[in-house]
Length: 175
Image 1 (spheres, rainbow, N blue to C red):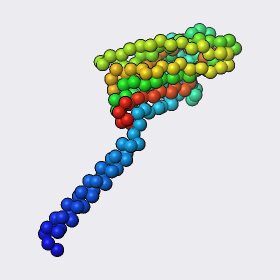
Image 2 (cartoon, rainbow, N blue to C red; image 1 turned 120 degrees about the horizontal axis):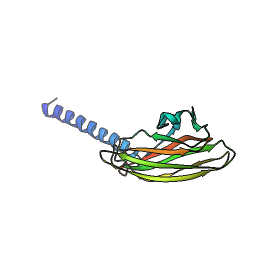
Image 3 (cartoon, one colour; image 1 turned 60 degrees about the horizontal axis):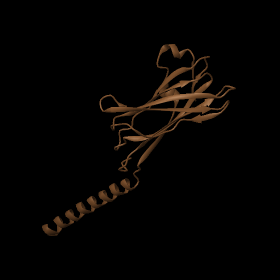
Image 4 (tube, rainbow, N blue to C red; image 1 turned 120 degrees about the vertical axis):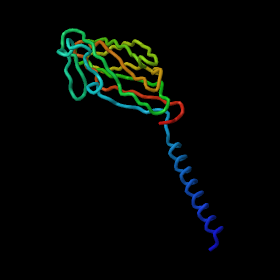
């Protein structure tokens, strides 16, 4: 076999490997998404912001309930996702009212971080007696890829915050 023939075979093999690698990369990018959704229990993401509130809060595997007689504050911070540009998304905390009268839950979303900017948006929902409801914040700007979603709520007596659904968006399908 001549030297030119051996070189040609090696070159063809290298080209075949490069083409196969490019095809695999292309295939994995074809499966990329423009959002990623998480489901987190409040027990994992929330707590009373001051020790004074902890006495009224009952933590269970499914949520955190105000078992006291007065409104209490609860603060939640969701884990940030740093993949892609993901500077906007949706956050939806869910609530259940164990009481016999309707209750009103008031929350304030604070998204971003001190170094790169942040913003806040208030929201309110009514929760029927023995009922469920949620608050939905859409297109919340994290102001930076390293920003996060954080919110505080006033929980009335007998109201539980449970599942929090949040979604990070990436306009470039990098997820």
